[in-house]
Length: 539
Image (tube, rainbow, N blue to C red; front, side):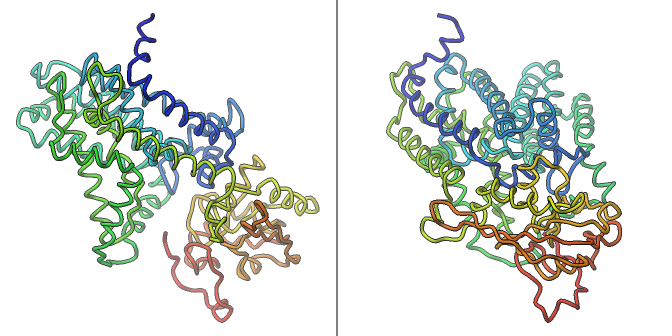
């Protein structure tokens, strides 16, 4: 038997392989059949417009989507192929972390880590979507592991080792920052790790550390270049998003945030995390390492920051996604049994798998069959946006056939992205009150005077203000998207003639006609339609 095959043939692999197979099947069904989530299509569209960075997020994921669209071509499989690659890199990295911490026990412990991770609804969901998160988690774990090896080696060898680990940690932390700004918590965790231990402070005397910081800044420079070119709009977006429009103290919201974090991480995972924290992350490590300390610092800083934010503004549970992945190798202590035919606390681990499979199945049904809430009469615009696009696209193309080189416009970034993806047309444009990346692609001279097809829907309707941006319009046509006899969404399609594009940068100006709403979910009351002079709200 080969050495590689022996790693698979561990008792824990044999115990958990059918659970793993269930998750793999569900993930494959999703990857191969689910229409792109609107944000997946949005980020795909970014990849068709290569830039240094973007308004909503940093650029790495968009760059990858652009490269994959060029080479393999367009399909939902290609859209999510980077997820498969990042998941493989993450799995290999976690195995090497287990090997580093536990030696030969890694053969068994890695399967505990995989079982805990894949059964966590948060990671099954967000490592499967073609969003920025799967690269963020992978690069953050890689960077953290390399930094741990650098610090451990430097302290043990009095500063004479691991320069390559340090530079690698800087590069991968920079790549994590090119995915999402929340990568800052890994950097802060590394800083806290050094400053809070006297022996580790000798790292501050290592000149290579400052070279690595320069390398980190170089990797992150595209974000700064884009913001310099665009009046720091991306930084302002996150400032305004976290400010929430004012100081409103809400002491209940942190409890809601923590509850959602615990449920989405998984009840058993959260229970084992609580046990780990009570033991102050003490596990049977093979070596003396700063790894547990770094894992706890990243967890604590990220969680504390978002709990604090939730008291005065909005904090979403998935923003805290970097808090947990470094802890999974340490959580294996709760379930690892040396030479055992099955894991310790097998009942709890089986419960985690069962709950995870239940949630994963519900998510796959939601994305591929029907939004579950609609079965009970609930309105779910996000879920409705996943269905009916071949039908809607055919209706849009029918309207466009009678026009000469028409613009294709929608009332929201979600519908614009889905339409662009379905048509494989990167020139579809959203015109709405929400400030988004489309506003930076708005080329007024190229748009002025052209005829257009405008698509709206119940959630983001076509308003009189939209229609006033044309010289004249035809009566709207209606398309209903149904699933199992239930109406999920109603779309309106309007042919407009002579689009009034306004001056250069029109959507970013306070007198933009659609600036009366920041989200496009309502139309301006008729009484106020001629008095739109308020400053543009920010998301």
